[in-house]
Amino acid sequence: MRSHRSTKRLNEIINKENTLLSKLFHKAEVLQQLDTEISSILPSAMNGKAKVANISRSEIIIHISSAALLTRLRLQQRLIVQKINQRYSWAKIEKVTIKVRPDSIKKTAPPIEKPHRSEKIAADVTFAAEKCSDPELQKSLSRLARHIRQPD
Image 1 (tube, rainbow, N blue to C red):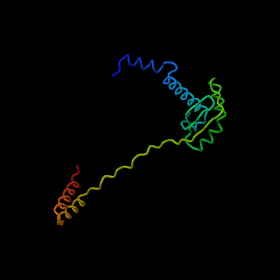
Image 2 (cartoon, helix red, strand yellow):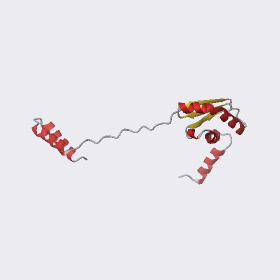
Image 3 (cartoon, helix red, strand yellow):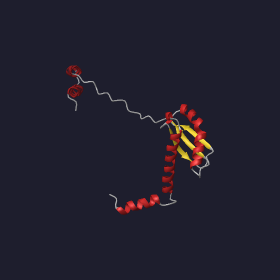
């Protein structure tokens, strides 16, 4: 559990000017604002499909989910550059880099098939155990038949 003192210290570290962490938080906020502004400029078909990945003084990098939308976004890039240069005095964007980054599809494991259990299979395994001449194999087959009838 954190004390008031440690929380206060953490806030000082985060909010202190010219620290690496404060610069990182500031850049994240700028990227989030840019993302919101650019999504308002773009057609509704691209909502949630384009993300601002990075920005520097002269370049902005945008990730888009498909190549078809990349072409449509290229048609909008002049408007994006104008909007950013007007809004942010420090930005002199000259280059827009657009990269296709498909949405990650979560791979789900195929469902594990439960073994087919039936009384007929258990009866067949029991019959094979009774006809077996090897005592160890007979014992193993009997246990298998019990397991088929009553799984753990």
